[in-house]
Image (cartoon, rainbow over all chains, first blue to last red; front, side):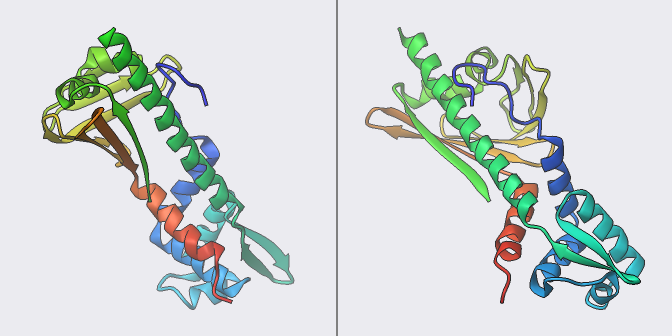
Length: 119
Length: 114
């Protein structure tokens, strides 16, 4: 983390993290990830039985979640079986640590600025 | 889910408030180019030399005590100032509904019920 005045904004959320947050902004997709975490593995048909949405909608949500790396699908015979992958969630959490570190740098720069002004 | 940080500045709250709200001062520590109308409903534009730009709207102003900004992605920054024996304690809290949704999920999805 760069210190001193005018540390650039971390706010340019890295594309991957933005994708993770974006994928989880939808309540149905959050619910799907949570159900998958409970079940371990499941097919779109099984998941559709648990949510008030169609199997097609479930498949679409799972594709978006897979794109973000939050679930992994594997063909097994005629079905695709999905399992959750917690790694992207850890990545998102690390990014938040970075936002915290950025505030440390900003506040250090603020303290320097106030000192300079007093001098 | 929120981020919270604090620092004690060796100046009275009035001076600390100016350092947090006057664009010329914000340009010394927060961003390279700052426009900020520190009144409720006022607009803030923060530009960094790396091309990053953030827009905000001022939600709350309690002169020398509390400033709340809402970023255009719905994240919120709250700055609270309290008099301190060494000057002023400045506390920053930043939160975002996106972070909360992802992190609340993290708690349950990472520790599934066996």
